[in-house]
Length: 249
Ligand code: PGA
Image (cartoon, rainbow, N blue to C red; front, side, top):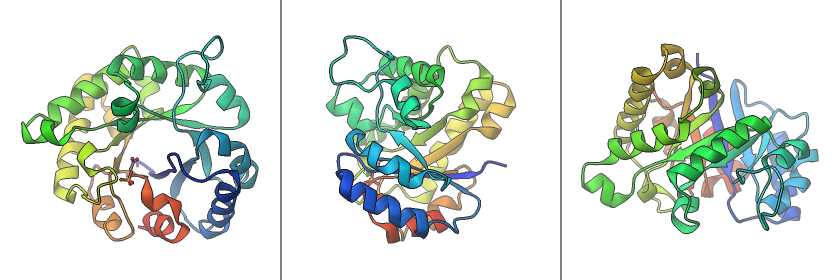
C-alpha cells in the first residue's frame, strides 16, 4: 500500500548546464518507471534550470535544505515559501552532512519540518546513527530519538506526507552499505516506534527510505525488504544509468 519512492540527492554537484542535461536524460530515461515516485534534489542554484525540464514529467524537484523562516534577515538561507513558489514540492531536512558539518540539531530539524509543512513542502527527514553509536549498540535509540524530535508537535494526519530516510552515517559516500538485514532491522524498529506512538495508519502509510551507498547492484536486495519503501541516493543519482537501475529495482 506504500508507493515506492526513490530520491536523488545531487548534493553540491552539477551546475545549471550539467543539471539540465541530467534532468533531460531522466525525463526520457525514466518515462517508463511505472508505479514509483521519483524526486531529485539539485543544488539550489541549479533548481531553476531543472524545474522547467521536469515539469509535467511527474519527477519532483526539491531543495536540499531550508531555513525555518520564510523571509527576513537570514543571509544565505533558503526560504520554504520561496522554494514552493519556485515549483519545488519537497525538501530534505536533517541530512547527516547538515547535522555534522553545519551544526544542525534535532531541535532545528523539528523547526524546519514544521516550516516545510506550513509552506506546502513535503520533507524527507534524514536520520541515522554514526559508526561509534552503532558499535555502542545505540543505533535504534539514536534513530528513535531523532524521529521523536523531528515529529514533535505534528498531528498524526501530517506524518504520512513526510518521508523518513534512514541513512546510517557510516554508509554515506563510503561504499559501505548496510546489509539488507541491518537496514530492515532498523526500518522495522522505526515503524514499530511509529506504531507505538501514533494511530496505526501512521506506521502503515509513512514511507521509510534507505540511504547510504545505494547503487545499481545492491538496490534490488535492499528494496525487497518489507519495511524499506525506497531509497535516498547520493553518488549513484548523478548518472542516468545507475539511478535508472535503482528506480527499476
Ligand atoms: P550516497 O549518499 O548514496 O552517496 O552514500 C546518500 C545520501 O547522502 O543521501
